[in-house]
Image (cartoon, rainbow, N blue to C red; front, side, top):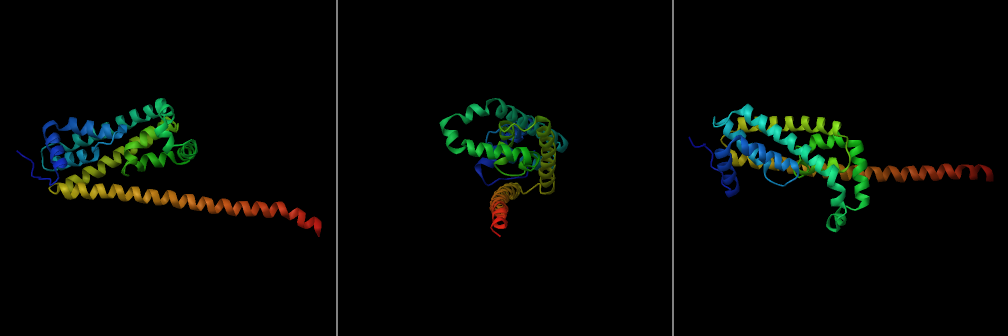
Length: 225
């Protein structure tokens, strides 16, 4: 029985045909390859799997299980790729132009302080979902911290997408559009948050510098008195 969905976009229709034909295998590899760091539409594949599960063409717990497994395995593979070969990539001229040593140092400190949060919430943010694993490995985030944040984020993300698919099973185009927009909204909010943190840090640093200058000048003022 054909699924009661008719995507308007050719790419979505092609993905629908793939998931319908290969089922859980496509969900596993689609989510897994995206999590590895390759920009493929893994989230869209999971949405289609959830919709097909809502219509009875796939078993919902099985879709959730293979998606979570793909996300965790893909992210961990990306983590070890970034940990073992990331420095070589940083040495290439093309990557070095975008990711110079100053940015690497800032990112290292960020992952030291906020790595768990970045990996967990990165699963819900467009683009960061793809690169969170390799970046965490590149910046030497402890694997024990990474795997906990990654697994937690993957399970919650899969549960959220599956719930949305089961609730809105017949509106594939609208569901894909909504979840994709939510991911880019999350990306925008993350960028704004980072910019705000940088501005606040600069403001605090200037205030600390002024305070330091005042303290250094205080003995001289007392000596002249």
